Image (tube, rainbow, N blue to C red; front, side, top):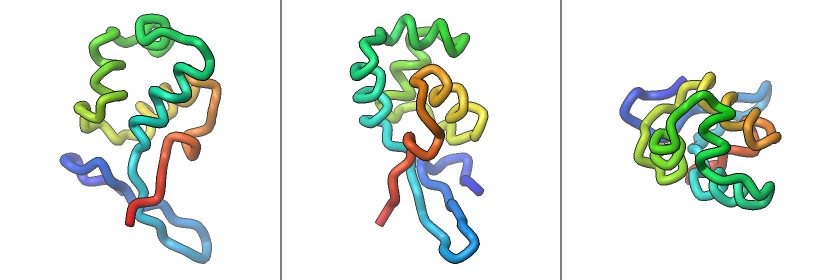
Length: 87
């Protein structure tokens, strides 16, 4: 469950509830690890390079699962890899 204006979401397991947020710097780090440019990543996601850059910089408040799934698919990782626990 995510608030439209928040970078945070709630993730639940059967025994614990976590407050999580998107690890925007981790998205950039992962993209660089696989030697992919923002332009190439954006093309694979079907987006503009500007939109990809906004996501990496945390300027696009778009915590929808479909967005995270698209990013994870391009970066060849899981959605969980794109999240970090918030304190």
